[in-house]
Length: 285
Ligand SMILES: Cc1ncc(C[n+]2csc(CCOP(=O)(O)OP(=O)(O)O)c2C)c(N)n1
Ligand SMILES: [Mg+2]
Image (cartoon, rainbow, N blue to C red; front, side, top):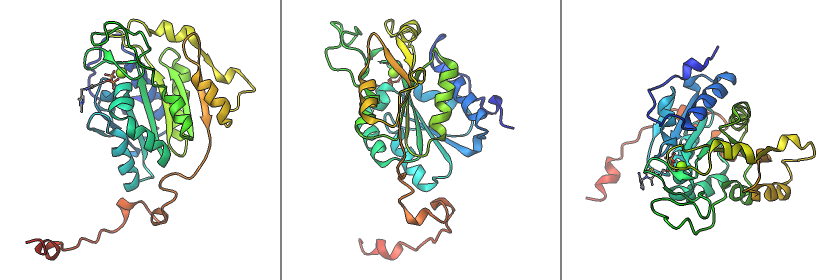
């Protein structure tokens, strides 16, 4: 039996009260609850406080360049599409530096669960505004408040017809673990936005702020996550109230489903046929 302790990793360096602790506990619970052992999962991340998460668990983990976790995970999924592939990262990592990769991962639909920790600020680098900071948010680099439009990751994902778009926050632990499990089990690219407080650099979007404004889509029995137009309208709700839960869910072939070569076995289990490349290199002498 897989237990939460199987995912116990290195000591953390987050601030006391950071929302990342809940996400870390949540992912341990979700993986153990699904009976997935550390050797059956691979976790990628870029740079940031959020991106440290894989280092605090156990399993196959790689902490790479800022904003580049999705391309690493996509490549890895080509090599072995049978291993559970997870990506973790913050709002800066995923929607600023890595924004381009976010768009194209959705289009390709690899079998990856992307858990985006959204604290609406650059935590690691001491609190600059991020793409998801609300207009008016005051930081050291925006002393008069953010004057740009807010990047809405769920709406972007829906506009690109993502196959799984969900949102939760760290103040609703049971809900968060449930969303994580569904994201991990979904076949194709699943995007889960986890709103989390940054107790040091974001004094506006606190746990209380998220709790007071969120409502669960599951409470509306008529809500149909297969209806993309309705999902789009839901994703645009932000401010006084915003939805959590599964916003959009559908099915289409994954990136690797479309590759006939992978039908027999994953690429990394095919016999390797090393070739002598010296004659080729000699051509360039
Ligand atoms: C190419 C590159 N640009 C910028 C940085 C500096 N940097 C590191 S983390 C980060 C932003 C982190 O914010 P976020 O992804 O929201 O993570 P958080 O710390 O809030 O969890 C930045 C700008 C870097 N490491 N590499
Ligand atoms: Mg952040």
